[in-house]
Length: 312
Image: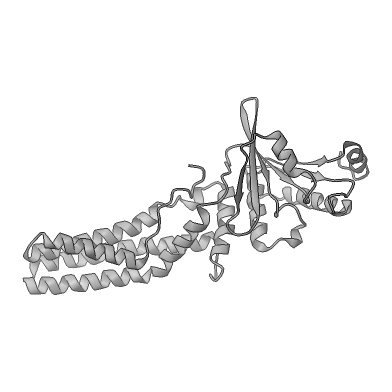
């Protein structure tokens, strides 16, 4: 499994849950007679509804136990998926999961409330009580209809996030477009580099791998994120940058001293300085200041620029 959100099951709708619970209950009741049939129907409907909702919740990883990279990235992705929520992001997902878990427990409570009464009553009373219980179970499931839909939205957004391994050393490549980042990644890493899109933007991420002394390293190129000043990024993109900072063990900032890339040298150095300054503000206590290095497309010009700007 490449990331903790891969392989999550499809989230059913409230209507699908109710239809499944009651159709299974009808078949179960058809195989028995009298009060026993009503009891079987109640038990089956309750189990199907509660178990399926609980499975929706337990299929998700425990959010707070995830690597900070995935927490930050998921927060950004879900924040884009829930743009209308008052509190978008991963906290909203946790609340939706909590509501569905409550509904699963509530359905069990309803079954426990009615099962003995159904068993003791005459057949007409038992049938009436079972129908009452069915109506209440349906109401509970429908009450979390929006929560189930939101969980499904989050699942669809997260299932295609890039395959990046927080437990492997990672070097993030940064710099303005056309300064040689992709060429560097392609040259240093194997030919099977992966290209994936962030679900919330048109931004792509390129991940290559190389080995040194039996250690596998990731080289992460992020066109559309670390290729422009921080003030030009929207809130979601800024969160994605923060996620990459959790992941990175080092950052290589590429600079074209000639300016032939189409961006003035002063702007390139300003971006480099902004990345270095931000790298010293990481809140993850497991990581110290993020090493930031500069790579110049032209060695002779780069030596002069580095000397003039105190980059040695």
